Image (tube, rainbow, N blue to C red; front, side, top):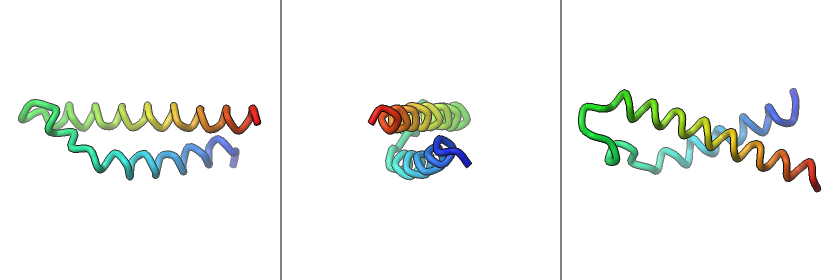
Amino acid sequence: MTTKFVLYMLVSVVVIWSMESININAIFKKKRVTQARLFYFFLTISIVYLVTNFIYDLYLNL
């Protein structure tokens, strides 16, 4: 396994754990559960990507 893959897995767990503290349904209209879940999914994927690349680039430049 590569370093970046392991980093993706670790960061994914941390981001999903931290995203559970946000009440995302309060932001959306009622009866828009599917859209709220899709937004939550894409937001989580985006944060995982950004954080992983930041840590990996920081690791390479040290």
